[in-house]
Length: 464
Image (cartoon, rainbow, N blue to C red; front, side, top):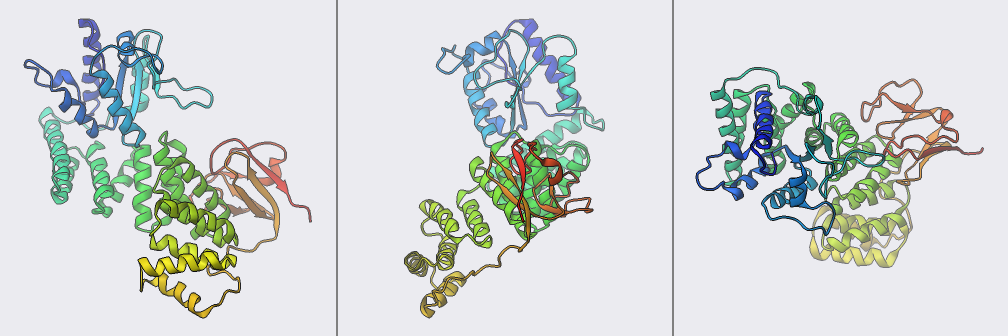
């Protein structure tokens, strides 16, 4: 909880909010709960932001003075500025949600805004009766189960020990303490969320993390962070139907570009497995735009999708962009050499093949490319399985993200991921969504694009 110290009444309002959050079952980082002595440990308080899922910023005129109303405006000294900047960095990385609660006054500080047309917003007006309660009931509802103070304190200590063990390089103990939190508070999200965080950061405990994500999602605690994490975990375990479902939910519900970027990458990969390359290509392009995942990996996937679509010249450009950041990546060099072969670009094929042999001699990719190089078989032909051949009846094209989905006669478009779907199939076999876009109903009307979600998708029939 971030706020500006004010009058006794103003401080009591914040303290009452902290009490209510604790009553609802949430651990709260709040300076008035810390041993005071002569001084509050400000650096220690700010460092605990890393433990938080939400940072609630109580906004009033004094808070605005410490952050400024607009870029370049003057600010008053105080550690609110450092606190909010640190929280904003975590928020931009998708680690927490930063929420402004306008308690008094009529201005928001820079970095805060209300929801509006084409604007997500991160602030709520809680002035007046019942508005704060409505916000809490919507975003931070009371957790099921009642626990005594000693149990909650023990769980909070176990969670802190789990964080400390991870930072000390002891992942086994970190997982054990997270399990202890779950045992003490089986209905609270904290132990499950910590298990997921540890699995993503250490590469261990994937099974426990997947169970934790499913447990929370089934109980209505499926936050966007958990959907994105579940998508990653299921994707790593190659449980692709569940990976795609959670990726779709993360795209629909997340305000975080990094989370949505990762989800788009995962959904594109699953669409590729289902031979829905037009939609997969669109998701890869949106992921690159959002920069939500490692660019080399995403550009490699983009190039691979283009190769499967029979467009190796465009694939070469994608690989060239990725090689600027990772010039010695064996995976990239293998793909770039293969795309050059498919495109009939002999000079670039030789360049990539020679460099691949230098950085990864004897690797499987280098051996395949070397066989082509030595054999001198430079007749242009594909080295990857091409996507399905269909008699195209029409194209659903988005003006925003440039996705173009070719459709055969009688096919519909999944509204959740963009996969073509035969008439009569109720659930999408890729992402489990039951909504469809019907080409015959599109006409000149714009629909929400199943890739970027902008309402700029139109259908155009192909004349026979």
